[in-house]
Image (cartoon, helix red, strand yellow):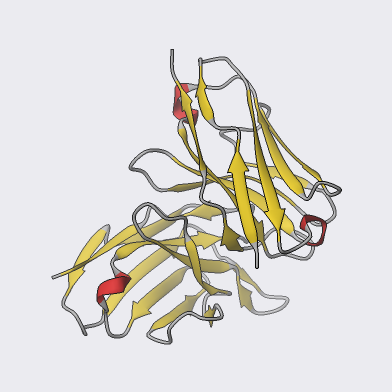
Length: 120
Length: 111
């Protein structure tokens, strides 16, 4: 059974940093693309970042240069390092298993999400 | 690529048809394989999104056949043929032709 468990969320001050983790089970993350998608309170879905099977990385313009997606295949865990955080980064962050051979396409399994709050 | 869904919300009687539209600011059709790079998701309150449709019209395994996707190039539709109480949710389209973007969502309620 595919499971994704996000962790690392919490309260952080503007300008601060946070690293989110997503522990996967039931499949090998190195055999799939993976993505982070966020949802601000009461708002819609916003794609944040993806990593392809080959390890190529993709970012939304809103986080480019501030967020870094990575993975540890030996730990079957996906990460996103978030720096220079802003109030508008406040959201629930979802990790998602993503279908795509050469690049990320659509996501077929999602975690329950972890809440990041950026506030002083 | 900007995706614009319409309407923002709709109320439909149980057993009736619900139709959600998604318009893309540019083509999401790959002419080399004739595939439309568009998916649909359902999100119920307090839950993560659930994949319903990919390649614009391919239903994900386990999704009831009352859900169907259609359209091509820039105009797409998600249809729920006979609305059930458990279909109350927000529905999102998503393109994966050029990175990834989501529509703003359409809230479906019972009339």
